[in-house]
Amino acid sequence: MKNVVIGFLGTQMDMGKKRRWRPTLSLVGHDHFSVDRLEILFDMRFNRLAKQVKREIEEKSPGTEVLLQQLDLNDPWDFQEVYGKLFDFARSYGFDDERERYHVHLTTGTHVAQICWFLLTESRHVPARLIQTGPPGPEDDTPKFDVIDLDLSRYNALQQRFDQLSREYSDQLKGGIETRNPDYNDLIDRVELVASNSDEPILLLGETGTGKTELADRIHSLKLDRRRIKGRLVHVNCATLNGPDAMATLFGQRRSYLGTAGTERSGLLREADGGVLFLDDVDELNPNMQSVLLHAIETGRFYPLGSDHEISSRFHLIAGANRDLRSLAASGQFRQDLLARLNTWSFTLPALRNRSEDIEANLLHELDRCERALGTHVGFNSDARAQYVQFAKDPATRWPGNFRDFSGSIRRLCTLAPRGRITKTMVTSEIDALQSDWISAQSNDDFKLVAEVLGDAASDVDPFDLVQLAEVIRTCRASSSLSAAGRALFAVSRTKRKTQNDADRLRKYLGKFGLEWGAI
Image (cartoon, rainbow, N blue to C red; front, side, top):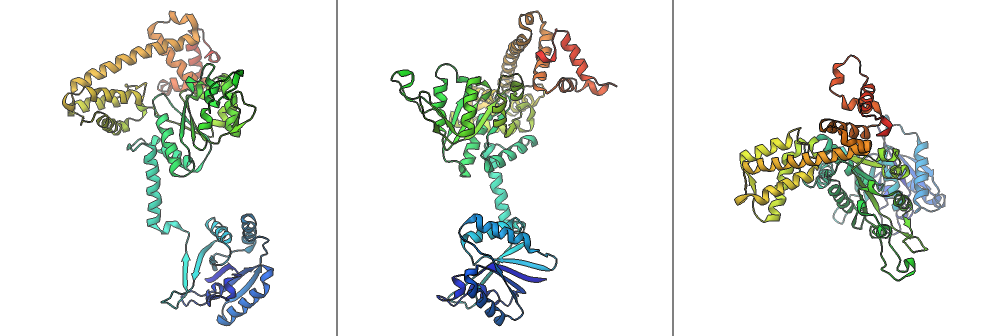
């Protein structure tokens, strides 16, 4: 195959006034690399120099075909102009990979031209390898000549460094806890890519206690490491933004607000400037706050209370929610346009009961945290550990508070452990206490949920039916349609029926309580 080299004319170095070495001429002086065709890009203002270099190369290497390609640049330091003209040159060139091997000479041209060559070769718009040349050293008469191949797969050590760095970032997002759940690992990998490469809002969904706050904090740390932000993480609990001070807390307040002297407040949005704003429980925001917040997110500007002038604050946004925002938006409780803005990147954290593979790794993590807090070594007896792990992994163990329940349970066991040993008797007592609390809380939650739909008639529902109806309501609210809810509720029995009219079965069940799909 023929070797073809493309490069700019060196308007200073190729003149050879200050030094004997001339980069373009040196290309044909290497015995190990023959140049069959050399294409020199030049500006018409340097036409005489281009023709002179062409003659000298033809005299030095008669077998090299030299072609002069006129490429006029008004400003060789203007990135847009240089890239645009090189891109057009590449589009019209007509590369023949089967017969010719292409190289780009990086040594000549401005730094802007070198960057543009790199981008065009990396993207394969110019299917070439890069050549760097240099003058001979003080103890060597041979000019330097290096070929750079952008195929990183050939550089195993470099590729391993990239892979290791990616694993370190993923471990950082996991809090250093080894996880085996494939869904959670895939989620963390996607979060790492988004946090590292995008400044768009990130929405973290999931039940309470699944780790949204911890993940938001780790995303902030990752963005700091990747130099995408410089500021701090500002955590806003939206559930507390109620009452007359809510707007001032978020957007700030001027001292003269309401016509009397008062405390001037910068506001949490202003404090997040240059950093990350984490809106925890964003589904708890009232409609008026949602409207003002949407404008601030989209424009980066807002009015503090009592101010006639907008102020600006640029921040990366992370929002967290326990409830299904789509259902809330459909019922008018959450703005559709705000949801669309927050939902650019959405990640649903799995519940602890769906991550049984990670129970033991998180158990070790919690034990380590307790040891640091208590200042003493704590551990399970073998039979106690086996009993606790079996309980924790049991599908019947719902962990309604997820990692909050789990972490609190381990802290209690460690604090009460005599001589730092957790016994089987202690584990049995802890399991009984957890189950009792969950049953009591579930009963209250079930009644509240049914009362939302039936009103006072909830008092007439038997305890047996109350549990079932509450689960049906939860599933319906989390489903996009009556059919989807039916498929989820009758997932097992539907496989044993000849006809599978899930929507009709669910409609009849709701009818027993005088309910329709739209009322839920």
